[in-house]
Image 1 (cartoon, helix red, strand yellow):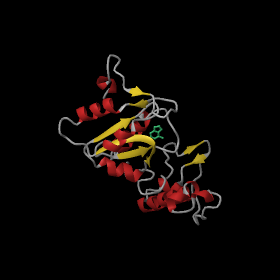
Image 2: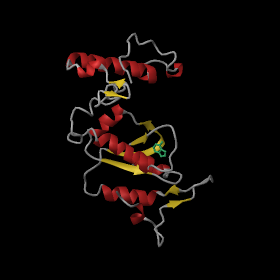
Image 3: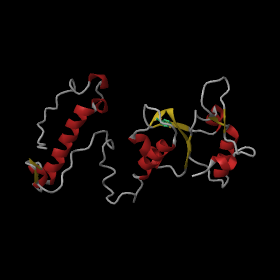
Image 4: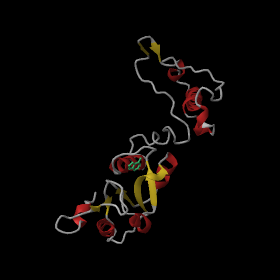
Length: 212
Ligand code: ADE
């Protein structure tokens, strides 16, 4: 983390100012941000990406997280106030990323969201190296339901197939559940019209063996 104030201007270490042309809020000035970015890269290790978190950006999804996780060095800029001076975006920023179509009060939580999405897929980040790859979205489908002990709870039973020890059948059941859940909740992931909603999503043709 780098404190912009260390590069602030004047006695009060000013980092922001009122926007030209009116409108409310404050805009981060270019000089402190540029000085901070220059100091970060002064070691000569040029970042692969300088990412500005903003609702204007390309929406973060799993394929983007996968691609970014392969890079060696990423600098994230978390704006606050009304944003950052456009000239920094033009001169330094290589990619603009949004975490969704809603506005937060700053880029700090989006930056943490992006970091978490990337770091958890790095080798060794998760105990079970398989689990990041079998996540929802990793192959464009939502995840299958998960069960643990007890086998029966409040009259609700774990599907027999999961206790059968038949790994082939379990795999098949999971795939069918994933497809069914994706059709119901996120038909857009299957290339269907998201406006159509789950009611009019294509019938699954598969019986759910879920009992809970
Ligand atoms: N800053 C404020 N809202 C944001 C969002 N939705 N995504 C990324 N950065 C933001």
